[in-house]
Amino acid sequence: MSNSDLERFSPLVLARIVGIVSLIGIVAGGFDIGYVRSLLIVPGDAAATVHNIAAHETLFRMGFTAHIILLLCNVPDEVISFMLFRRVNGVVAIMAMACGLVGTAIEALDMVNAYVPLKLAAESGAMAAFNPQQLQALSYLSVQLQDTGLLISFVFYGVDEMLAGYLIFRSGFLPRLIGLLLGVSGFCYFADGLISFIAPSLQASLLPYLLFPCLPGEASLALWLAIVGLNVQAWRAWAADPRTAQWAP
Image (cartoon, rainbow, N blue to C red; front, side, top):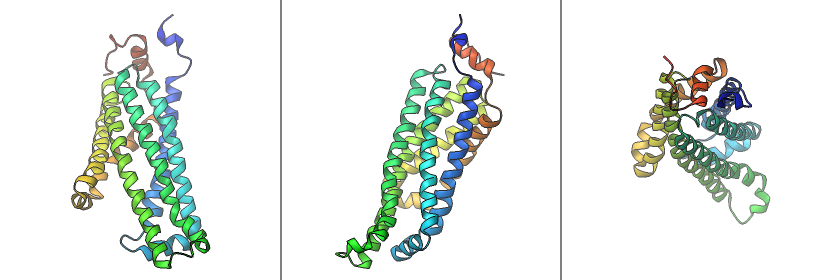
């Protein structure tokens, strides 16, 4: 019996699951980071930021929940991707999964900071020792710390996507162009995270342009997997014997 006959799952179904959860994650993350945070957070103005969060509590909670959904989607995305790509290069595949899961864990822990402003507003009576200006400063500091945690996670996500891009390009059961685009996306995340700590002023001047190339790689991969899946024949060639597997034309 060949290795492909021993498989107890459909690679096409798994690929489409990855595509669907990736699309959900992109939409959820875009809603919180791209819409809610940009609407409620006023850079350099703690009082306005706290006022916006308190005045739009429901929207803030919806954004927070969407971000949690994004993190939940990351887990099956990373694990199933490892299952699909481990035969292409097991070491690279497990390194990519590990970096993705570490980045997810950092971002999940960082969500505590995201919840602090709402918690301070709800517990304002218990914070009588602090004046309103101090509470506003604490809330705004938590928002800044969340940004810092997100940038740390970007370093790990960047390595994850660069390695995944290599695996896609090498595999032949997905378009090589998607692998290249994902590799560029990973490099941009990685560079954004590191530059923010090495040269903050440079990172500020590069935003948001440095992150623009991230969407084509992530979106193209998610859409391709959700709609097309993968080349099962090419995938089974790797499953049968990685040494003789050929790249798809």
